[in-house]
Image 1 (cartoon, rainbow, N blue to C red):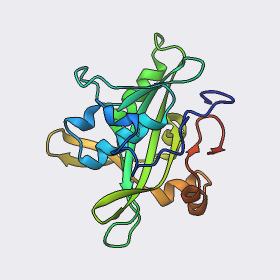
Image 2 (image 1 turned 180 degrees about the vertical axis):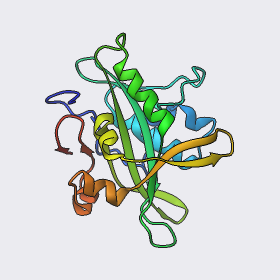
Image 3 (image 1 turned 45 degrees about the horizontal axis):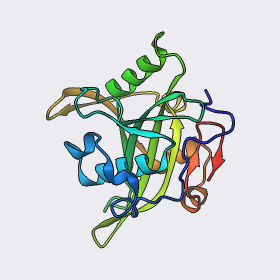
Image 4 (image 1 turned 90 degrees about the vertical axis):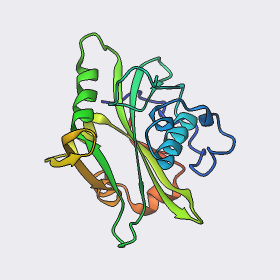
Length: 203
């Protein structure tokens, strides 16, 4: 389902992960990352806030962990945004992986299927970074609709989480995700951003 036929959700594609800690409005992020996530996850939230159209912080008090922030399209549609980041390569040489939690994923599906949630959408905001001298540098970023991501997940694994107990999850390498979305690594790295929420837009 396209969010908007003409306007990409990412309105400031030139904002980079390495910029936001210094001067972008995303420094005002009040999302979950400020309290619970690692500094890298927090920086990913700040990047999303700085680059998405009319992005609002998630209230840290509402107890809803299935999304990280909300954005509004140019026609005022509400967009629930779940932010995922991963390193480009692990020390082993394998491609980094995004971890998707089934209960959060299903909760997002429930939100957009809620009869009282007309004109709302959900997207994943994926960010890949590399580490240089202890700091993250952006490799690439993209937005993908919840429905597309859901269509790519054919099974779930189970892990005994330290705070959540037994949880179903799916790890997806960013390289495999690009292949599934018919995007080359070169295209992903050279673009400021790729927005797949309203067709394929290379920004």
